[in-house]
Amino acid sequence: MASLATPQAQMERAKTFYDRKSYEEAYKEYQKVIANFKDSKEAPEALYNMGLCLVEMKKYKKAFITLQKVVDSYPHSSRINDIIARELEIAEMMVRSTERRFAGMRKDVFVEHPAVAVFDKIIDNAPYSQEAITSYYKKGLLFKELERYEEASEAFRTLTEKYPDSRMYESAKYQLALSAKAASLRPAYDQELTKEARKNFKELADKRSETVVGMDVRKELSLLDEKDAQKTYDTAAFYEKQKNFKSAKIYFKTVVAKYPSTSFGERAAARVKALEEAGQ
Image (cartoon, rainbow, N blue to C red; front, side, top):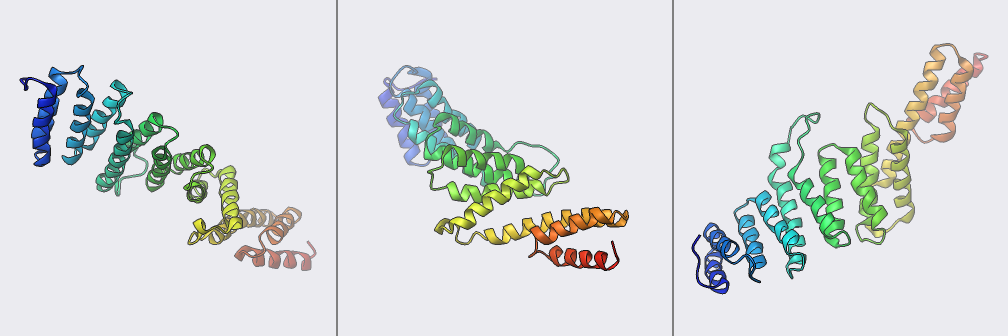
């Protein structure tokens, strides 16, 4: 792969193509720096610019791999912070560019989204950076969109535990509560997820901070109460049907005591009254 006599001259030649937006040609010219001057101080810069060319060509996966090579092979490069920021942009572009691919896909068919690996690598590269915090948050949103609520919950939970002072903390708390609630609605009912959702919604409601303006946490708490009230009411109705009136009354009274504002609270009170009038 023939090149000009010096890495500096080759970099200048590559840049002329880049400035003309001839990204494919620019990529090839930067590649010559790596091939012929791999130990030069220009080599990591050439590799970085190859990544930028690939971004412009919308070859996002290859762009990420190329930029990551700079981090792995030249960890003291002055471009590391720029690369972390670029990788986050690539992950976000991957999310947007693959929306159609994943839209309408059967949720029981597992196909890993390519952005997940990029978010994870950003976290590995710079665990205390704002990009890492954003990666946890965006990964959580992505999993939530894909209806992988347990994984979404884990991403948001990790953000709140590792970065409690982050400006994204309360938004992550809200998304964690929503994800935990959605996960708890699955057939394999998990009481702990409901508890976690309730705890986070209540914390946000009690704070009344500006961050949660527009987040209808009170409504979400009401929906959780409705769900739990129905579960307890259905248990009471089961015992009543089995003519186990003592147990039925206990569960109906639990609904009245714990969930008086739900639609099941009034119904449970009516059932308690009817059973007592019937001498049960």
